[in-house]
Image (cartoon, rainbow, N blue to C red):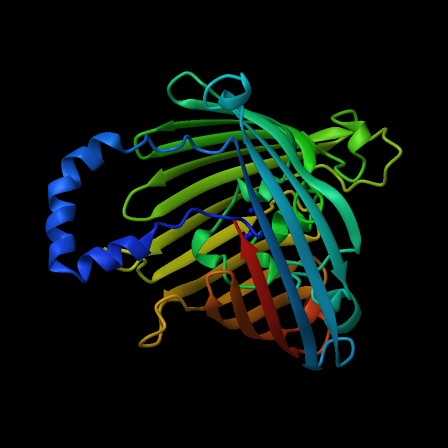
Length: 377
């Protein structure tokens, strides 16, 4: 829940002269005669920018139509401004990067106040706050390694389902076995940590260590640590197997969850070859230690790009997210969503979810959401 995008000027070709030459046979002849000299005189392409930036705004209305805690609607907003600095352009090792992301959340917290579901019907629900969300340095190490350290959002790198990224329910981002059993460095709070990624051919392995209490960044690893390991094979689809271990310091003053561990398996499979095909996904996670709130979870669904004639940029997706809570019962969310791309920078996304037994105990709820997304990069 990484699934987390300016008024940026950009170069446009000078099309006026080209149109004038194309409209005139004499102009075409003159252009052909002058082509070699013009080619020789063309300047080299400008070097890539040392700093790239992104700006995004997601704003939505979430309406509980019935069931859960109480009917009614509330709003959520997530704004992000991100920068990536090319380290090689400023004298750092070639291929290195520095990333910084500023974030503002403003939320009526629909799951907490209206629905009562634990998986969260929206992936941008969070306490209202401004913060530095990411601030890390990364660089290659040899031919097959990349190292990264700093303030990192672990859910942007581990346990990611690309085909589930359009769905709004939070369980299609960070799994409940992870988000519900630990204080994880995931949206809306990243954590201090370090990662090492190894990639050879179709195989990728990623290891990360993060602070056990990301709500207190000054503690770093003094209050314990969360360890994550993931292996992935990229063939016709992407197949992942991962594990995590949460080990807080029992003597720390913070009221942290008990030590726990878990694992997950996921499949992200295109249904055909070619550009932008439809795809299906399946992910299952379990926490066998019998100490956390969530025993297991399951997510499955499908993504359909360009579902309607003449709407190639639109996307449709549906999914099912299920979580089993120890001592309470099972919560299952059924979601269907459609993203209407209005311009390259603007989209509108209606979403409908049916949440069976929010929190495992409450009456089933029907939830409608309308999200506006604005993005520049």
